[in-house]
Figure 1 (tube, rainbow, N blue to C red):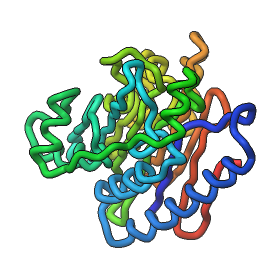
Figure 2: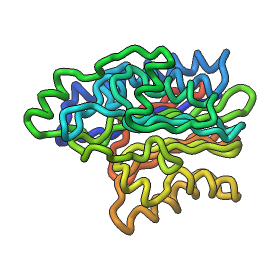
Figure 3: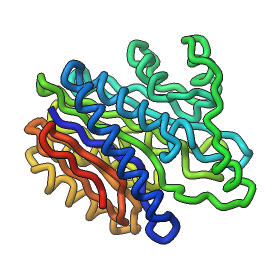
Figure 4: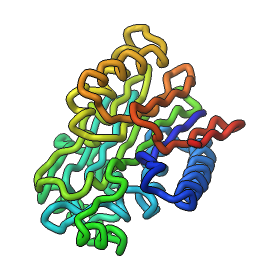
Length: 280
């Protein structure tokens, strides 16, 4: 049973050491709590649990603490995928929901499993998700100052459960000040993908990740016989053609955990029940 989570990128130039320590402590707490949860739950249940905890922590740009778009509103995206059933669900540009990943979880049971904009929000309300503002004072101040600090932010989780099953979940609050209607990678197979061989979740610049189909490429290469390290290496090499900004976490079915970023430092933590690792 293994787990790895990410929480976007950390900028040494624009973020204090105090914030860095806070993120390290938060990720260690969440990954340990999630590994305990994993002992009695499936990989699918676990990735939703982990991402919900990340969405609830305003240190990260997903759920509470999400970025504000160019028109002054917050719109979030999230997706979920089960490596066994190969079912994918997601919400794109959903508004005023505390945990977008939980809406994606409900959608997994429907035929129409990826919803966007007003439809996603209406579905959430009809499913019992109450109206909830995820705005925090820091984001409003950044918006009013026209300065989106730490914009490359997304949270995600990959889990391997006791039965050898994999699942992934990813959630984002956007990059800040984007054109209304922009679609990020987080609710696509470029940013969130898994099968029985490997699971991968991405963070970074959505357009770069979409152009490279990053998560799907890595998983496909592991499926075709690449080691997870070589699959990451080849896929990240392809990002270099346009200086793509991305970070990825992954686990293969053998339990190998791997992470890589193109522009350090991605914020992550992993736990296998014995050892816990966190970004430095």
